Image 1 (cartoon, chains in turn cyan, yellow):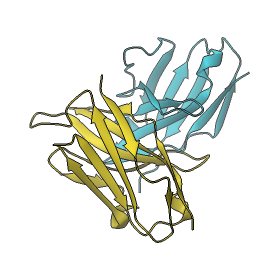
Image 2 (cartoon, rainbow over the protein chains, first blue to last red):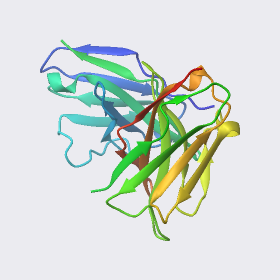
Image 3 (cartoon, each protein chain N blue to C red):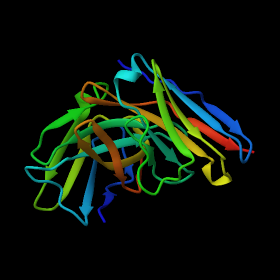
Image 4 (cartoon, rainbow over the protein chains, first blue to last red):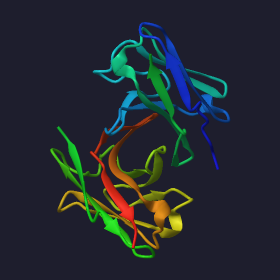
Length: 106
Length: 124
């Protein structure tokens, strides 16, 4: 079965750039999405189709994909960005989520 | 503004069937030109998201292969709701269960609306 691999945790200082990776076989041939989940809340989409940002999501969130890796980048990270982040892609007609990355802003 | 709300028992005994319903408000669950698929996703305590499956308004389903043998989804367009049944549950099925809307418009496929989630515990 298809798998997406994320680092369990990433730490960043306020105002710096955070990068969260997601690796999967031939991921660039699929469209990756990214979801943010704050403690006790439902997930919220922050990036879709690799690079697109839905309305209401701050410009500091961006996405890219190359080869087998998709990357979520948060520029000028703020304390409010501390959350779990999940990548997601499609394998044929089924949905696959990465294991999630806990972003700590300290 | 479309909203999703899960409902169902919070406690299920081992070997029994878990049953949940998601009520869709603020919009129709679908029609012949609908771009929306209706999903169940779960999250065990302290762990990541696991997709369970989706159902289209006309009853077409797709399930996670790892759960397929135990999952049944149904839709009731007259009530604007869809449901999940998971049979032969064990403690490993304890999780927060979310219903979520999938927007599928060409290459754009994304979960754009989520319910608040409901906690289901499997225990005797």
